[in-house]
Length: 241
Figure 1: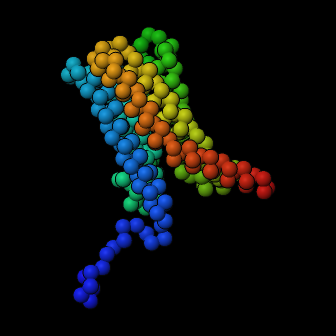
Figure 2: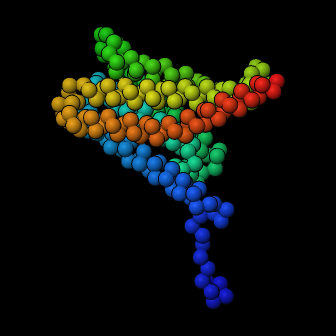
Figure 3: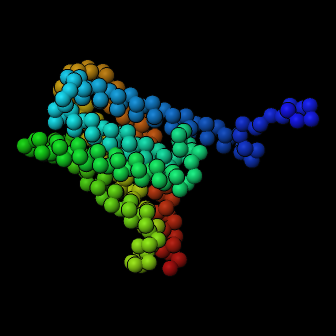
């Protein structure tokens, strides 16, 4: 209330067109949907892992660590950089990056630990499609984590090694996309395990596979766009040299 007159606060910036507002709303809604799908899938996996109570066996520990590592913490790590992510959209860019790194380190650590525990438990490893895609996810997760440190200190590294400064960031995004995509494919093949399928039923199992594919597609949209944009930028810089 000012000078006896009621003033209204605009719900969107004055310079934002109606189409831009609709696009932002749509993208924010997709982001919210991704969080819901993550909760359903991760919750279902944890429910299955704890179905027999404590203590957990090696298989259950593998499920808990890998699902929390890949599809909760690493998923949130990727979403934290999205401008439409609910819990991180108000953060400064430096805080977004800090949250991204904390979540990625924690998620990678859990996922790697879960993979190692299962590989030590099984006599034959990486022979099934679930195992093969898990191996791809494990390798690219490890490489992405190491490469991410190079991306974080790209300016300092460039002083020592004359490499394009944006190259480490482009490869970090690429490795992350492959790692997360492979982890979801591995998860979907894991859903086809007889014990899981018998516990939830075929219809619910197929639903979980669809939900996993859905949130993975939503999560990877922004990184894929960023990857293509940075790749084009690097190509343009190379062409100017």
